Image (cartoon, rainbow over all chains, first blue to last red; front, side, top):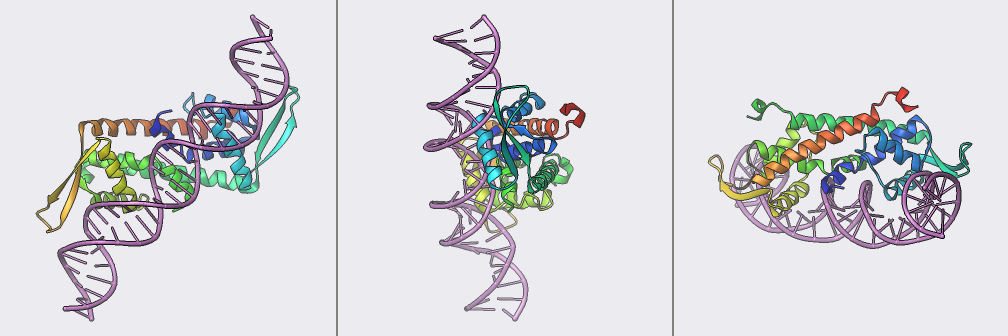
Length: 116
Length: 116
DNA sequence: GGACATACCTCGGATCACAAAGTATGCGAC
DNA sequence: GTCGCATACTTTGTGATCCGAGGTATGTCC
């Protein structure tokens, strides 16, 4: 991935994952697929990115993982759901992201007249 | 600064600096002040962040620095201006940032109905 | 049976923001 | 004159997070 793109992503991945899990619990592979599809390919995160992040979020008490056998498959999957703290963190991240976007717009879209 | 906020900023600082220098050449301290004021304090970057970034941008050939004595002060200041490649990079960063914002909105603001 | 998708796991490398510590000087208050 | 602060620049180590490579395992399709 483009180097600078990677930098922009830092901090975003957690926001995206928490957001998706705020909607419903998902297993790792499903998270990755859902992100790729919802973003039209913009967020094509690797397993090496998402699984370590899920473990970190679990260690911080923001998510809870549990193995579950789905009805539609014989495969074992580890589903992740938000904890109460995770739900709070999800909201906080959305707010922080929104504030960043506003702040960026203030600088990037300031009318040139204001530059004086 | 809030830990997660720092992560969000990664990649943004370069975008902001290149953008301001695309408007007009500035010296380091002025860049810092302008960012803080334009963003209403949201981007209160330290000298330890901005100066190393300016050196990196110069090393990559995106900016050019030169010492200059201003008329209004006896102090020496190092002004930075964009090179041709730097101007191109500034545009590219704005575009990448815009694409990220769009992609984030696609995921974060998808109607719940679409979730199915 | 082999390739690929599915599903998960681990670890080292790269990058960038932060902050601390530093030097230097001009200016205003005392 | 001295002190504190703002102004202006410089250097370096740390921490966090994304990436990708490499790994295991299994189900499905050809």
